[in-house]
Amino acid sequence: MSVNRKIQTLDEFTIQQMRDFPHATGELAGLLRDIGLAAKRVNTEVNKAGLVDILGDAGSINVQGEEVKKLDVYANNQFMGVLQHGISCAGIGSEELDDIVVFDDPVSNNSKYVCLFDPLDGSSNIDVNVSIGTIFSVFRRVSELGKPATQEDFLQPGNKQVAAGYVIYGSSTMLVYATRRGVNGFTLDPSIGEYTLSHPNIKCPEKGKIYSVNHGNFFQYEEGVKSYITVCQKKDKATGGPYTQRYIGSMVADVHRNLIKGGIFMYPGTTDKPKGKLRLLYECNPFAFIMEIAGGKATNGKIRVLDIQPTELHQRTPFFVGSKLMMEELETHYKG
Ligand code: AHG
Image 1 (spheres, rainbow, N blue to C red):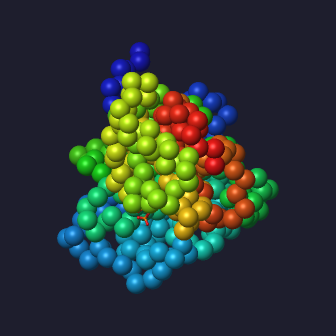
Image 2: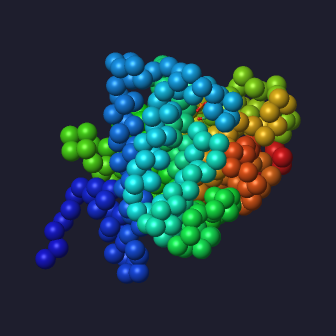
Image 3: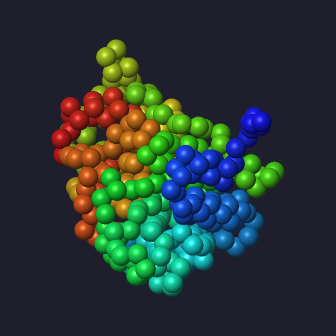
């Protein structure tokens, strides 16, 4: 007799998915469980922000030259700690750390995955109670099992990702992750402390009504980008415009909304920063993977983000991601 389960937790879901692959070892399920656990701890602190001394700057500058917030440090330590003490990850790369951290112990050296993450994206919003998030990306190692992970394991193009996801600490807390089989979203139920499947098989609408870009930089964008933004603002039956402009400045929140409702998010290069601001490995690759699996598109203005061969851990790239038809319209104006 099979029992009709209405509620499915993240663990139940990942185990269910494993049952379809008799040769699966459970390492990926374990890795996702570890990430979910670290995110619960971060969520608890994010919810207390304002009550305890966790807001504000930690007093240091990270590798990107940005002020490190105390919650950034906390989140980084939680993710690193949980993955290091788990059994599914050979090493990590973090937006907060100069270099990769290879765990190099007998168990970790036999783990087949490495993980890259931005522990707390949008952290400049922490002090003003705006949604922030964690972004992660999982690769299968290319280095020899049984030995420590190497830099090569981390510098793989995004099309080699095995899984990618994010946690949004918003009006509710959600963990959304993608594998090649689909994108699924889980909402944290605080009454039982479990992520439960709330958004099965997410598909990004082919077209939306939202465009998200930092308008303050408008005059620094290339002509093609300006031209597309102008199209977004025009009343036009063919495009469905004018679109609504929404930009939180917290990419997890901006892209999450556009993924669910349909829309386009852009962080183009500027004359000051031709490569833009966002990091390929920690921010763009994971969202490009999620969006493509959900039916959308992601480019750097020239090529698919997932086809960029990274050359350094912290490299930046212009980034355009969103609904398929809106991305195709962008491409008619801007070719990078
Ligand atoms: P940070 O983590 O330093 O707050 O950066 C957030 C990122 C990304 O989440 C967001 O979309 C973008 O930076 C916003 O940058 P601008 O303020 O330059 O628009």
